[in-house]
Length: 225
Image (tube, rainbow, N blue to C red; front, side, top):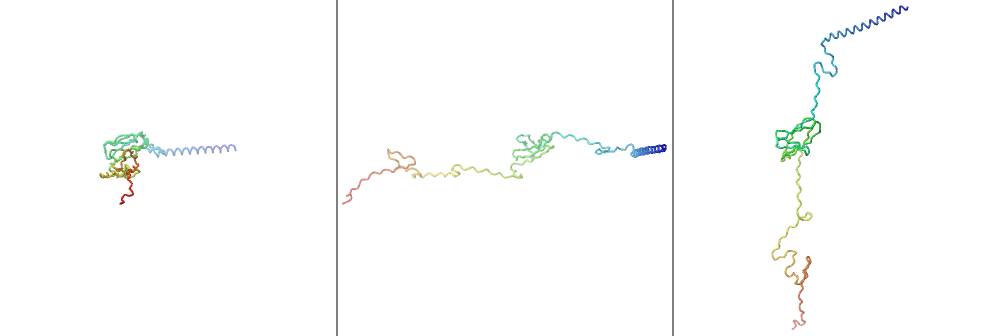
């Protein structure tokens, strides 16, 4: 009984070992067959995100410059065109020589004013995201009514009239009276003068009437016959 049990256990162990050996042999045969099918020069498998065989990996992008260029051109070309940033003059635009400004990258926009004698001033904005080229059109002053949004200038108010009172114009001057005629409001001449020894009345006060000489009394029988 014991011997038969041992014999059956031995047979089972040998069968297990033989099965494992067979599985290992089949696995080795499969790997070798796959290698022979791919050949010795077959490429290795490509992982996700890797470039395909024979293609070089792209180079890293170069860093952006720390500054940008702002090129300003005036049209039509003039001899002297000034560019201002607020009250600060940045430079002049010469004929066939644009003004080039160097600014730090991403340092914010520039509100510029372009001025030229005989032309309407132009306000524009330049950005610093990258290199920028501005072409500014200049309009002569006598053609400013062609601009969009142009409004006629309101004439200045007329100056107030001189003289008068409270906006009422002064009365015209009166003509001189003819010879021999007294002016209105003038004291009478001749008999209007005060007699000697009598003071003249103050201005604005009429002179007293002249005294008359006493008349002789009439006699009762005057004229009786």
